[in-house]
Length: 348
Image 1: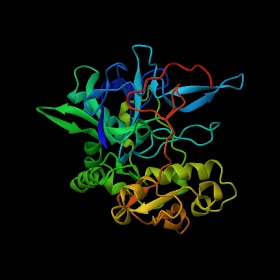
Image 2: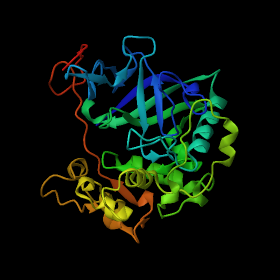
Image 3: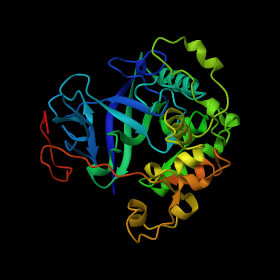
Image 4: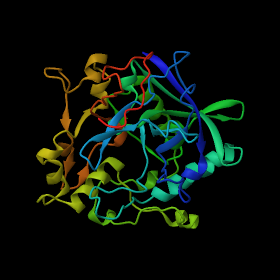
């Protein structure tokens, strides 16, 4: 286990209500960090080029072939950047959909939390750009990205004479929920829970357990919106994990009568969680591979925690979600090591 650090910068114009073209409109838990691929990635004090032209996901071409979606976007331009998923937190959705033929929707507080982060970063920035480090504890390059090709880590910025963890700040201010995955270290989880316990503001008093259908349909935040809209962006709020499944239920219920029934469908059978109290008793191998046959891990199907059709009983901070591991690839077609360096692969 070692520390991987990215040195980069955050363009604050990427956040609602402006957005940064092309097609970047960040919310409060997903941030695009500009990097220099030749020097920004450092593992245990040594520069690594392991992520050069590496990918997790691909896109289909018109001729039927597929092309990689490189985890370092626009690597060969001055706009090289990495999409960061802030580890251990989940903010209210600013724009989300399941059916690509339907408009994006948001949760209550999606605009307000995003604007809160934007204003905070601007207050610490010089102009509209702020330097940062992104850090994560990992064993291999394959541990770094999630199944969507997002770097999972903590964003650190200068704050006076010290360093501030943005993930912890968001949770403490009540702009994001604690949200844990089995890839996290116990110390990382404890730090987020400590920040959550300290805070009293933000959306905390708006949290409810029922994911009611009237939560679906709020228009998404868009570039060019009036920032004054954030002041009115309040209302009942469920954990984003449950909201995203509510969106799927409303856009295609697949015959299910309730959200609980929808979550029990075979297509949702991989929605698995572990109680945090149980997770802390597991070995590192069990935490890393909880779904392995005969692992002994007390897995729980998410739908069994939903009662009365749409009510999620446990609090977000008491659960650990099981996440599929990503499969990072590059031109070598082999497991990627810290000393590897890929080259462009136009098609697969």
